[in-house]
Image (cartoon, rainbow over all chains, first blue to last red; front, side, top):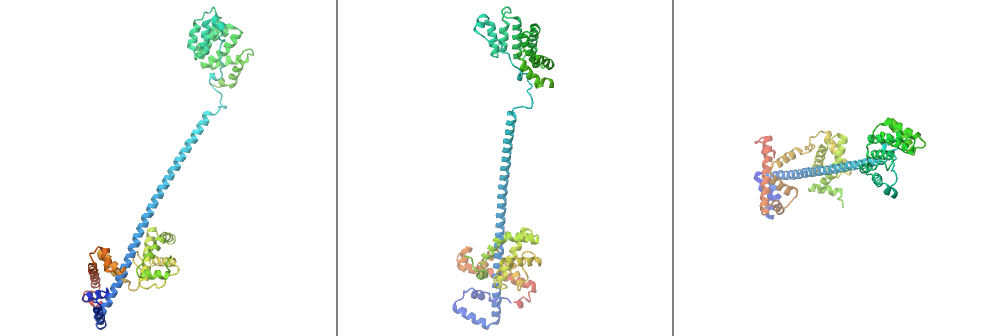
Length: 264
Length: 178
């Protein structure tokens, strides 16, 4: 059925565009004209189908558009969650690193500050008991100012100056063995263990069993140790440790008992 | 206040599709999980299946095949989706139904029209806009222009319909098919 001949009238009728008189006339024609009635039915079917098609298409497009929006929202949410998770992971890693650093710092602090009881000290200085020498008295200052000056410098830790001053002291005013002993002490304190050995050995050899020789023996042992000559050092210190009259018996015993000299 | 179910059906028939849009928005995620679990369907395909099923549902309401709103709409829609899968209906092709061929042909021809014509006919026949309102929506100068545009678009569609008949039945018999 070709609707084209009737299309204008059918459309105006369906869309309510006719005047009341036109409409009445058209309705009358519909009852009398079979072709027009058939065209009207076909037109109604077309517009009904069109109504359905438009509705169907509208719903399809709306659902598609909603789907795209939801996908975009989902993607954005996923991205945001991913970023948040990454930020959280980074924070956890940083916190972990900070914790590890703190722990390492704590362990290091404990390690370096702990008292080392397991291993004995190996340095000669740890066992050395220095001899401050005779006290600088007014009498000494008056009687022997050069010796007093040397002693004062020695006791103040100015060893080169003390050695220089001691060199100016006349051997006639002070005993030769005392001068040798003091020179040995000063050289030992200055870190010249080899040189100190010469003077201290002479005092020990020449002093016999006197107090000064006993003292010199202890310092000689320490001078050997300072010069890394451990065997003679051990020998001398053992002798001192065995000598009940030696004023350095106790520190010598400690050094021998530590076993540091034997182990090395 | 929620709309009663019976009224929802009436609203759908007169073109208010909000109910189905809301249903899709609410159920898309759960439906995709169900389709994944039951039929190992990827999410994107599940979303398409739900859209096609809702279009089926709308068509059945529009042409009167569904006259009563199902009590459990969710179960009903899931059942329809399951039927689509069982019948292995390709995406975007509705289930066989009375007059479906003619309507599908018209839908295809409707989609051949230009975007403006589709919009004009949708405004008039689906949304039921008056010519004045349609003129405002489309940016026409007045209602008369809107009416002429609608008439022109309807004729274009009819020519496409006639072309379809001619192609199917041949020009000589097209008039007899009506």
